[in-house]
Image 1 (tube, rainbow, N blue to C red):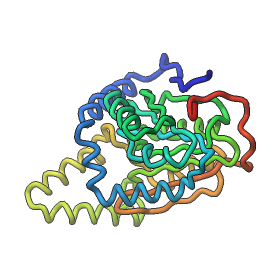
Image 2: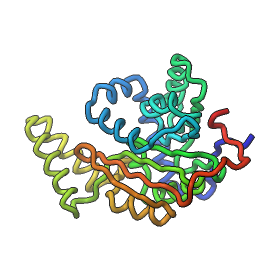
Image 3: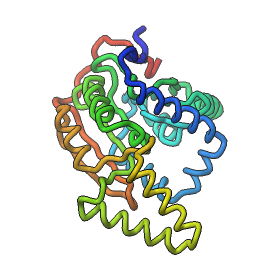
Amino acid sequence: MTSVHARSASARPRESWVRSHVLRRAWGSRVHTWDHHVQSSAAFGAVLDAVLARSEPRATDRVVDLGAGTGYVTLALAPLVEGVVAADLAKPMVDALAEKSEEHGLENVHPVVVDLSQLDLPESSVDLVVSNYALHHLTNDDKAALVGRVSRWLRPGGRLVVADMMFGRGTSRRDRAIIRGKLLSLARLGPGGVWRIAKNLWRFGVWRGTEMPASPDFWRDALSASGFETISFDPVVAEAGVIAGQVLGSAEPRPGVDCPVGR
């Protein structure tokens, strides 16, 4: 059986390796608080609804969730589709997802520990690829490369749906409105808010660190360059947005390629 695998990392720049190591440790340490963080947030709920709406899940779909975490999107999709490969960098997150899948009786969830920048799958082996608030941790080059690989994984008619913080560096009217709204809401919090403003300016301005959001225009261009059509962008709340596209062609019978989804 052909399985999910990581591409050769022999030529990975040291900076990329260090970033992955930092992310692995950071997200592994958040495993016990993450569920409460997303489940108590109306904004995350709105984003999940938008992802599900754009995904249009079908009972025969083989799905990949990129940056699945503890399963916020995976567990919502699994009862609606044939199977989900839930890929995440942090083993504690993946272990928690595996445990929750078992508790829910979901035998069609297949958790995988893998760096998304190195993830690869057989061609034409899945129907739907989703990601929720994960890909801003990849560089723009890695984002574009991942979109290119996804276009090969998808069968004709397959869909890619990405939800994330989607804004640039203040060059568009939407960027400026998002930044202005964030500054005003934080300023109302007093000294603590001012501190968070300074921290966010450092994170997104001076030092990009592990958070590197891209604009909707970047995502449109990346999907278009990889052959996606019917590309759409839906703003959800604040900086959150959902980009979606479909590969060329119409859905056809699945080729004889094994994949762990649905196995």
